[in-house]
Length: 406
Image 1 (spheres, one colour):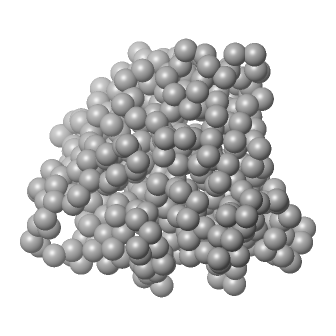
Image 2 (tube, rainbow, N blue to C red):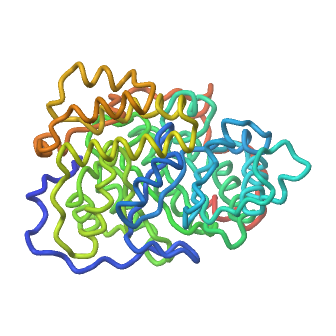
């Protein structure tokens, strides 16, 4: 199984600039997508990342049913910063009707009138919708959602078809894993189905749901998907073990994919998007920030979170980010513990002001995983889920032919 390369694996000569990524009417100058991450990629984090470089910045996963039924948590997750140039949202659904109604609401917020949705009727429509078929969390897969869903090909096709139809001119993409486990792989078949149903791109996290986030990503699976979709005109995006800009260049070179999706690599390091923009433009990678610059980023992130979620909730949300920001920096256990309990900007400023701003970034932790580090674990599935590839969803003739390989 291929792991992400060490920086030395990338040629010393700079590559030619990489073409932009096109998703329907959207052009992404740097072919980089921020992976939707629950509890992380809210409007505040997306804003911070956007300030560092070009890319497509996707919201955290939002449940389609919660959105149409007016769940306030779903509404908060579906909110955007006023200056976001591309409003990109990821939807999770296990029912075709739910995804149809949610997409219709997102592309035309005036539909919120007379419903229980908390979306503003005068809100700007979304510009891009991504469908989640990659989440390995038991609370998702045990209902047949996330990475479990593509196993039932008719259900998968029905959800993709309804989303694409309801979206109209708004591009729909999918993000998936290689399969449930090594014995139940789904990516190639799901990729072909989605491409034939009109998605604008297919992103592949090169691990199975069973592998979670533990073993190295198998980049060869991304190359196989590129090959499988050759000639269909649908971009393939690779995801898995992008810890630094050189990894992104290596992934594109090895697999032929059209761009990369970045998840855990940017936790505590929003400047990764600056590095990626430089790398894909064929430019030199800037030096990493010193501790003082990182402290300023923490403060900036806190302001954005407080503006998005309110002071109390925002500072509570900041706490998990501080350990990622300070990974490898010698700030001391007392400061780390205090930052994990910070409750005001006065406290935050005092703590950040106590660090040695001249300390350089520790290169030894550049490739150290952050966020999820779960080891392989048997996937929680509905009873009898693997007994059949057919869910019993009625499909129109055209979609039925696609599912059956016609």
